[in-house]
Structure formats: structure tokens, C-alpha cells
Image (cartoon, rainbow, N blue to C red; front, side, top):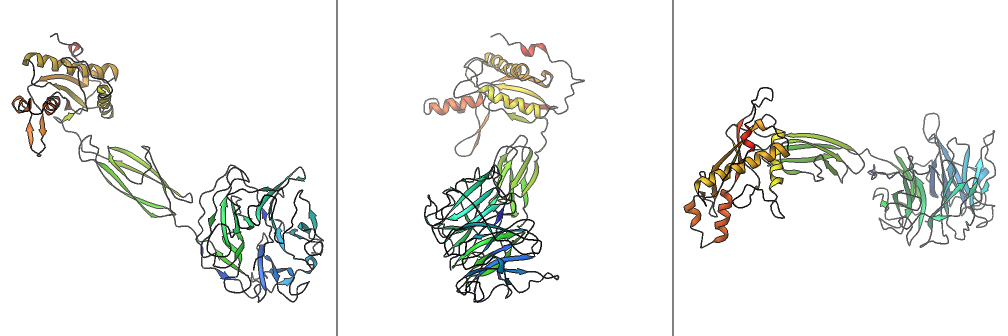
Length: 534
């Protein structure tokens, strides 16, 4: 059976706040006992702030003010031992119309109720009653909201803690389907005309029974227009920039929602109360507790770099528990779960799960120490033909490669290195030797003058064509690129011929020391900055 009358005391949202996803895993729901639920219909539970009084309405009860077809307010209270006692009719607030307590002030001295003058379906709205010194409730006073014309049989309200905001469920002037959710704000004692909560909330079906979480960041409501488990389901949505801007509603799941009618959910602490007719013709009041989310626990397994200045390190992260989905933020700017092709260094990771739980890791990847006499092949460094001028164009940027060499020297401040340049076999031996020396000096000059590397750490050396490179051919065979080997491709494969010569025209670094001391090292020879004449 559909019942739509509801109002709860709410806190106004902070319009700039957007909550994380809610963890909605709950225990198996239970039906409240015979002190509340009977063969009649019980619905719309509302708990006092101290948790000692539970208000609800009962329909199809012969002891109601207007008889079995009337709807009256009932109350159930806890005794001194904390046990619920038999519910009783709150007679002073009931008449022959539909009656319901739809909100309780924090101090418990004010009740918000469905306003009625006792004539069914006339002058419908929201009323407020206050408790007298004798403990009786006053006759409700109607709260006037301009342009609020309720013509349908089903409607409801929601009010903020400061009583400056009302959310209304009714068929309004801009309703998309049946009942939509609207809001009205009290400014200097005057209520604004109702405005829609927006298309993310309101559907072509009906939206009823709104309720805000304790932190005022989440709206719970019921609808038959967003899909789900059955006739009417309970959803939640998060307020974004304004009262008309909400996140896409999320179904509360098949423990709270059933194939039948579920609505009027409220939350006190970690306990949910709501109305459902899942096990009976008429609705009863059910409750369940929110389970604590699994803590976010992560671990990692990493592989260190296998060679000096290599990049074959890897980090494998494992999420052991938490609430998916997860986000990953690495100190190197990556956002993937795992990392590969890593150089030595410290990698910091922050993992965050769907409800905002966060864990961090700091992983250090190491590499083998470099050995003296170790030869390091520099990145792509090319020169103008017959010259020591660097090639820098749209295809080759030699200085970018040399910048990486500078980074290596900065990272290892005690490393000393020979800068060795080679030529291919074309040209005279003597000229090739001078050319290679000048190319080594060009590298030296760039690192010292442009990158600020201490010149005492570097020694430029030219080898000419004396030490051809090794190359692994297409068959996987290692071959020394001698002039005779390369010349066999001069006419049969010109492209390969030029490529092999280019491999020989290389620049390398050879480690000659790992203990550079700026206090005791001698001055670098001045001739390292002077190019040879042809």
C-alpha cells in the first residue's frame, strides 16, 4: 500500500561539499516487534533525538480516532531498562483526517505534523505543535508556503534543523511524472515558492519520503521511477553545487529494498528504520544496522633494477581489502595500479577507496653499483657530416640526449667519466682520429659550460675508427662492424650500409672513478676546451 506523508528535521547542506560514495552494506533486516507492528499497517517511523521515543502512523486500526480507515499517530517509548513498551495512540494530535508526525525538534519540544482542519483533503499542508508544561501537545499551527497548492492525495515534507528549508513531495506545477521533490527556503521569515530538486532526482514516476543523513551530505528518498528491486525502492543521492544539483541516485540494495513497497527510510547513528510490506499485505516497520566498511589494506611486491642506470624495475600493488573502486596516485605522476620500466629511486603511492579511506606506500628501487671500466652507451648523439657540430632538428635532438647524460652525472656526484667518441671507417685514419677528439671535446664543452658539470670529472677522448662497435644481426649473431663487413652491403642494401656506419659513429662514457673529491681534485687541462685544427 502506498503512503506518502513524511517530514523529517534536516540539516542544510553545505553547497560546496560533495561526499564520497556511501558504504551501504547492512546486516540482515529485522521486523520490529509486536509492541509496534500489528495486523494493521505501520509506517513512517521517526525517532526522537535521544532515541527513547519512536513515532509512527497506524492505519486500518479500529481504535483510531476516525475508525478503521483512518490514519492516526502512535508512539512507542523505552522504559528505564531500555526496552520498548506497548505503543499507544497520541490522541491530542489525531482527528478524522490522515495524521502523522513528520519531524521532531532537537530538544523534543516541537513536533511537525501533517496539517489538517479535520475535513479530509481540505487545506492540506504542514503544521507545527509544541509541548506544554503539562506534557500535552498544542493544536498545530499551519506553516504558510506561497504557491504551494496540493491537489493530489499524496504529499510530504522535509525541514532543515534551522527551520530555514523545506523539501516537499507533491504533484507540483513542473512535475515530470507523479510526485516530485521540491524545496522552499525561509529568508527573513518569508518562505520562497517551491522549486524542483532537479532532473537527477525527479523522474517520470514518483519521488517520496525524503530524509537527510546526520552530516547533511546525503539525501535518502523512495521512488518507482529509477528502477530497482520492486514496486518502490529506496535510493540515496549526494548534493553537489545547489539544491537543484544532485548526483545520480544509487539504489540502497536488495537487503533494504524488496520486490514490494519500501519507503520512509530514516537513519539514526548506524541504524536504518523504514516501512515495507515485503512479508505482509500491509506495511510494517523494519530496521537494520550499517556494517563497518572493510579497512583499506594494501601491499606491494617490487623488482629492483638489474643493471646500472637500467629501467627494468617494476612495482606490483595488491589491494587486500577496502571498498572498490580505487584510485592510485604515484609520485611520478602515474595513476595506474602497477608500474613497470622504472629506474632507481623512491616511488611514493597514495591509494584511496570509494569511501575515502586512504593508505600510502613508499617503495625504494635500487640498482647494482656501477663498476670502474664500465662503458655506458650514450643516447642518440649525432654530428653534422665531417664536423663536431651537433645535429638538432625535427628528427634528432642531440642536446636532449646529452641532457640525460648530465642528469646521470648530477645523480651520481662522485662519478668520473671518460667521454669517448668514435667515427666510422670512411675517410683517412688521421683525420678520423682528430674528428673524434673534437666530437668528444664538443660533448665535454656542452656538459661543462651549458650544464654546469665540474670539468675535473670528465676526460674527452677520441678513438677515431679504431674500435668498431658490436652489432647483433637479424639472426641474433653478435658481429663486429668492421669496414669489410659493412662494405658488403654498399650496393645490395644501401639503407643498411648507412645504418651500420651510423652505429659506429657513437659516443660513449667509460667510468674511470667513483670517488671524485672536489676538495682535492686537480684542475682540468685547458686544452679540453680547445678544438683540434684539421
